[in-house]
Image (cartoon, rainbow, N blue to C red; front, side, top):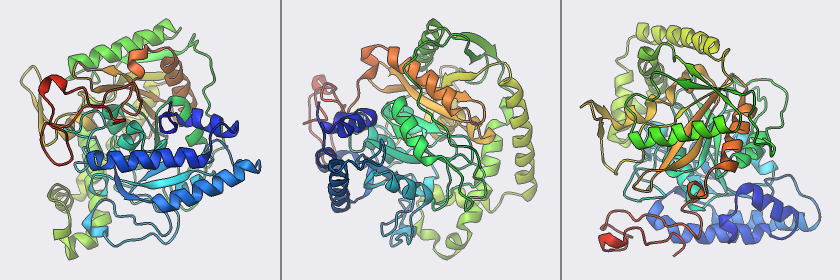
Length: 494
């Protein structure tokens, strides 16, 4: 196994045991970036020389016995909303084309102090205002969407061009691309991870969190990120915790809520089957399944948009009036729509969220976690705008992808997406675990127990030398023209 194929946890252990140098690991990842970026476009900026310098420093410290922790020498990507001093933060937009951060964001500073090595800034849907990240290509099939808005971060982790990455999540923007690219994505409890120095989309819905290859990796990153920062008004002042899930696979006594409504409506049959199999696996590990009724479902999407649209427009008000032509058309339309939203609608959305939080808290008194699909369908083809369900209902792709993830943003509850298999086209499927406030430890325990016992076929990924990546459609720049019968024959390690 080559260095870039290692999970964060495995790489950290190898560095600690001096079987692997941070220089070897970072060089392996940078070589991967050089070969795959023309096809994936996961990165807005690659900081190769900076990464090599940091890797050499990390190697010298390791040789002297001065390890800073499990992230020491580990290569990472940061979503291009997250400030790093001296590095461009463009939000994947022409609006910020010349912007360079003057100081580190809180999360970047904490990761740097932990010894993590920045490989680059990953692409986002412009200003995180979308669910596809159209400039980035899915790690499994480059003819399909990466998911958004943290698409670049998910693709980098899936393809082995970063050991872990950070994203932001306002309506599902960590979990959606995690599910579509077969990696693990965590949206923490609102306020657990500080957002100081992170470009905002919607301040009352925004979260920062990690994307990793394994659930165990998540715990290592979250332990570094979590903690109070008074510069973020929403930051929670709670004691530090050890999020490591341990080796136990026994879930005896745990109550898993299985929704009887909402989460399995208008969901692809293969997605539903895979998630239900995963839930049955949790039951086999000792969990007790409990049917739950999701409250206030008719208000979820209206409340999400009712909060996000005006808050986003308020953030962009000045630039929208001075340089509107610099925005992409889809984002500009949404920002202009926010100028037309009545204040009363925003206030009603606030009231709806308050009621929703109360009802979800009541529901979670009877269960420890809720298990459901992360997204209702796997990655759609690039440029596809709608999904047609068997009953004839036509749904916009963005509405479909946000529908199942938005409740965790509205309630501020933690939510973890874990891979649970693939559809017949070979595309990844994700299961979402939702828990109580500050319940990340429980989610990670459940996700890790599932991960340790899932079949080997569900563990394959485009970053591994034994897995086949899918090619994009048989045309376009930077692709190989293959006969249809060989569409699955191109390996990412070529």
